[in-house]
Structure formats: structure tokens, C-alpha cells
Length: 435
Image (cartoon, rainbow, N blue to C red; front, side):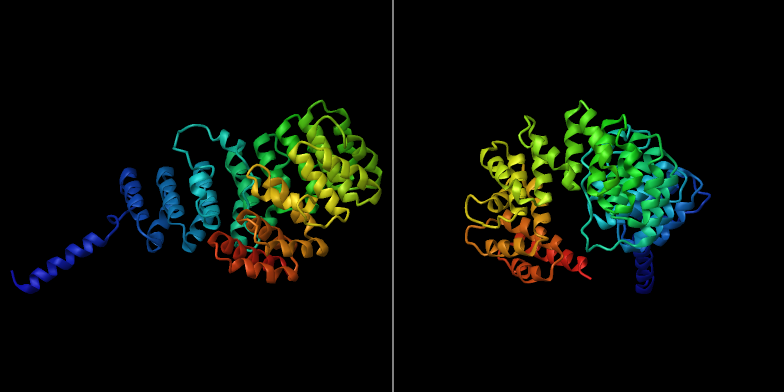
């Protein structure tokens, strides 16, 4: 064979090798189409235009393989096809599309989201709705409106209740404010998982206008729904529900429910509630003591200082002591010496068990310029730890104040890579919150 012939055959061989899958046609059998789509999915984003037509395949197994492949590629080019797949009438295709969209903004979500362990005709997904539900994107991340709209439509009218609940969780993670009407509509469902996920999403989105729509759930028979509704009522500051919360506090025999009700009331300080806060400050239950101190701290009544000092000094449980520390700082104690309440809050950023309690208190307190000015010198101390630096970076970012820029810039140049990354992230979130 001539050199030209050898070269021609070599080119043919290379061209065949470069094809990620055989040419697929609608008339190919289902197994062939599924296999071909799977092979295309092993390529990069350049294969997405070849896969996308199979989102309209008459066979659900082919459509499912197509949405899995596109979600797995996970680039910007995946978004429009995944939005299209949200309109599919099959629940699993919709779930895969939802998780794929979330995965673009939260890398790794496909490994942990609702569809992570699923196989067609596999085990129930009900258990996934009992998992911890505190994931949410950073404020600086901007989600395309079309993404929220597509997932929101599933919240209010998806092809199954499980799919609607998964969509509700997704819009919460993505802070999808545009989907609030869909979430409020979903609250009228009789499905506890969908209601729970919708309330939890409304908490994350933090739109106060949604508060009144949750009030009817304060006496829900499902304890998880009731607890989440009570918590959301406090966080969304629905003051019209205070009397209902008092009723729950007085009538419920469940300590978790009583704690949640008093905590929600503490989120909405009212001088008329001072007697209730004071009455529970030395209650035998630590959760009620914690909520009572919070309420007194937010009232900012100097007359409560002595009782709170006593609570802080005598308390032997960490969470109510943190609450008493929060209250004392709120009432004006801004010192950072070893045994001061503000220092106690900062020190607990080192605790894996309690940083999730200390950090929100510090975030709330650091909205006060005087508290921020007390915290800035702490960042420069030789004894300040990595966990304290990273925790305070998040605290200062949430303040939204321009005076936090310089301290966060200093953290972003810290020699510890974990601290410097936290500083950069905090700067992005701070700037996202500024006008």
C-alpha cells in the first residue's frame, strides 16, 4: 500500500477512535441509545449538544441517562438542558435535573443530594428528607433566574410529592427568593415532607413577607413540621404570631416544642414578654434558660444585667452560658479579657460542638459598631487561633459594614491557607451584602 493509502487508513482509524459513541438514531433500540448516551457522557461539555436531543426521547430510561450525563458534566453549558429536563413528566428525571442544577452552584451535591444513592426501582427516598438541612449557598453566588423559576414550578406542581419536596429543598439551598410564592403554595399540601422542606426553604430565603403564611402550622401534629414552623416564625419576625407562640409555650407538654416557642419569642423582643423571659431564666431545663437569656439580651434593659451576670457566672451548661454571654455583650459588656463574656463567645469558635451556637450570636452582636471595634484587636493577638480567625471572618462578613474590609483583607493575606481562603470568601460575601 502506498504511503498516501496508509495515511488515509490511519486518519480513518483516528476519526473512529475520536467518536465517543456510535451515531445514535431514534430507531435504535433502547439499550443501544442508553449505552450511546452513557458513552457520550464520558466526554466533556462539547458532547452536550449531542446528548440534549435525547432529553426528548420517548423512552424514560434514555431521558434519564441523558439528564444524568448532562448533570455529571456539570459545566455552564449544562444549565439550559437541565432547565429543560425540569419539565419532564417523570419524577426521577425531574429529581436528577434538580440535583444537577444545585450541583453547578454547590459542587459535590450530586454525591450527597436526594438522588445520590438512588437506582431505578431502588430503595425509598423518604429517608433523605430527615437529613440535616442547613446547606445554603454564599450570598455572593448569583443564581440564574431561569434556574429558580424552573425548580419553583416543580415545587408547586411537580410530578410527585417527593420531587416537589426535593425542589423545595433546592430553592432553599439556592436562596431562591423568586420561588417564595411556590413555597407558600406548597404549604397547603397534606404531605409532611413537602411542608417541612418548604418551611425550611423559607427560613433560608429569609423573606419576612412569608411569615404569616406559616402561622397555621404552629400547632401542626407533625412535630418536625411544628418545630420548623415555630423556628421560622421567630426568624422571620412574625410578631402577629406572638400570642400563638405563648399558647404553644403554655400548653405543650413536649420540651422541644416549649424550647422552640420561647426561642422564637426571644427572636422578637417585646417589653410585655420580659416577665416570661425572667421567669424561665432559672428554669431547670437548659434549653429554656438559654432562650430566656436571649430574650433579655435583645430587650437591652439595663435592669436585667445583674440577673444575667449571675446566670453567666453560675451556669454549668455551655449553651445557656453562651446565651447569657450574648445577652451581657448586648447590654454593653464589650471587654475581651480572659473571663469576659465576649471572649467566651470567641473562644467557643474553637469548639466543634458549640461554634454553631457561638457564631450566630457573634454575627448578631457584630452588627453593632462598638462590638466590631472590640473584635478587631482580637484578630491581631498572637494567641488567636485558626478557628477563631475563620469564624470571625464569617462574623464580620455578615455585618455588611465597610469598616470590616481592612481586617478581612488582612485575613485574606494570612500565611495560613485556610485562614486566607476564609478571608477572601468573607470579602466576597461582605461586598455582596453592600449596596
